[in-house]
Length: 543
Image (cartoon, rainbow, N blue to C red):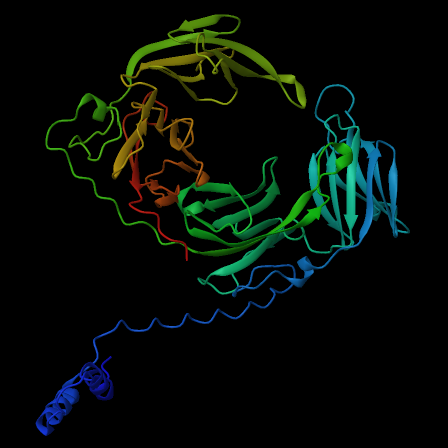
């Protein structure tokens, strides 16, 4: 910005010439005037723009915070103080009066009993209405559920059993907000939606169709802090995804689970409320409210891995993490057959790293009938001491030994055990990738891979053959910053790829699946599954 400053310049010259001297000549005045006309002020930095006005406050969300197409402030129903109708600890056989009803702790027989001997009674909290037909009077609010919330007749009933299940703390208020909410369709198809989860309102929400894509959200308390957990099903990918993290005031978090991107926009922590009962050894917790935005996620870009010009190394033939793919048409080797053995009733079959035993087990509810039960023990395997199966075929791996166990064709009290050898280690630990990386899992490769620090931030990948079903792949990440995330999917070449954002990397499931070979004449094939990991270059800021 330029400004004329002629008067200032003239004044300054006059001040500098005020010492005794000859009077200025006319031409001097003319020269000064001409100089003043052409003088300009030095350039200055523009004034900072005023800050934008704060957005207008949100109107309270309607109802109890059910899904809506626009964000809202904490609903009025969650702001107000609720009257306490009962707060007591009940031993078995004791009850507390409510207006028009009674809460009673009692022992009840199970509605269906399949075990041996007489039915075993269990503690139950019963809501009994007055002046109602008997069949409509009793509502069993729980049966051995340690902690629960129910809304009955416009009243919220919180309860918690003691560890010995001999007494239950109950806390009843006139809070009529539902504990659970189910909704099949979005308020506006394809558009974001907002919902409030609250310890005083909706604590569990199920959004979408269970047979296509459903998102389950739950707000609950852990011993450390309130916890928000998510479970997303994706039927087109034969996958389920999960994630969660602890909450605190002013928390702002985001995660992507397949088709859903979830953003925690606001967390409010209020006054202490009785939620677990001091009388049964737990202090009250503050009420917690979380405003959550759910929108359609943007999938990551398609990964492209360069092909190695040289032949595959031993590590690459086992599917070790690599920034490139091999030129081999078969990504993993096939397990090598070592023949078959019979597992006979009453005998123990000793194999490398595994001991097998066959028993006949009574079928629950049909004690006159039995079914074969195979017990597997792993000597010297540490935490993995034993496994058992009664559904066959059963694929079992221990170290470099892989077994395919199925019924013997012509013997009722025998099983056929096909034995294979795998040249790759069952488990692998590797550093966390810093560039796009491809990991292969499969029957002939690694069954378990851990990336990163097992005691800190890490990603675990596991593969299981599960005939006659498709193989199962389970991926779990854990991070002090981003919490826990998981992706489980069936290895089906026809399934749609699905993405999991661990917070530090994208992981793709159902991306590339190969059929390797048939292990036995009538059995299913071995498989190899490629899992791309694409680390985030920088953490994207939350909106």
